[in-house]
Amino acid sequence: MQSNKTVTINGRLYDAKTGLPVKALKADEKPVSPAVVKKRAAEVASSSVHAQPQRSMTLHRRAAKKAATPGIAKRPQPGRHMDISRSSKIARFAPHPIATLKPKAAEIPDIAPKAHPIVTRALARSTKPVVSIFSSSKTPKQIKDEAIAKALSTPTEKPAKKKRGFHISRRFAIITAIFAVLIVGAYLTWVNIPSISVGFAASQAGIDATYPQYKPDGYSLSQPVTFSDGTVTLKFHSNSDNSEYSIIQARSSWDSTAVLTNIVKKAAGDNYITTQESGLTIYSYSNSATWVNGGILYTINSNAPLSGEQIRHIATSL
Image 1 (tube, rainbow, N blue to C red):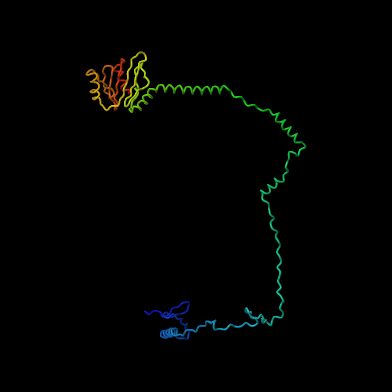
Image 2: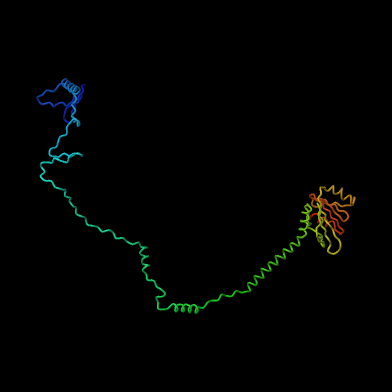
């Protein structure tokens, strides 16, 4: 099957291969053969290939001369004569240029200045009339007399008298409180005098001697407390007779066995009583007792009838 050689577009024939338009045939014309169409297309293609380039039509400004415009005077160059050729069409020249004055616009007045509100109030105060005390018809003496009479006519309230009873009771209460404090202080001092005396003696002897918290009824400490190097002696006498007992506290490195061997057996032999009380070993013989505690040797010498229970209480209270 042979493909079409022409194409119809908008009622016109075009060659399908070259794209060139094909003229419509008249009634008496013969159709162009394909060989002729091919030959014409080849000629058109060769002519377009071998066509000569068109000459440039661009104007070269540097080479071209500027055309002179007739009737226009040349502008004078600086530094040359001012004799300017004028156009022949101009008959007269004005001696000087006439300036046309433009009509003035309606003048608008400026806004008037306004005073500040604070300034306005200050000016209003300053313009108020000053009332003087001397502007009246009264003389200064009359004004003074009126003021004195007014002051004398006004009753003055006297300050209320304070009740003295309150001050007396308050003063009495303060004095009573001071006496009570003094009495209590004196009593505490009297009660603690033995402990204070023993503490002073212990500091002088260089040992940690103490005052017993327990003492038999009817006995009191004899003053002063005697001491020597490493020894403090406390003497208690009876308030009813001549009986007394003494507590000797001395520095020692012995234990209970050494006390038994060196003191008890030498003084009483085998006639002694051993009592264990609060971790202490107390040796009692005749009217005496001895024990050791914390590096201090305690000895009670007595001509008073002290019981074994009283001696134990004295020992545990030291």
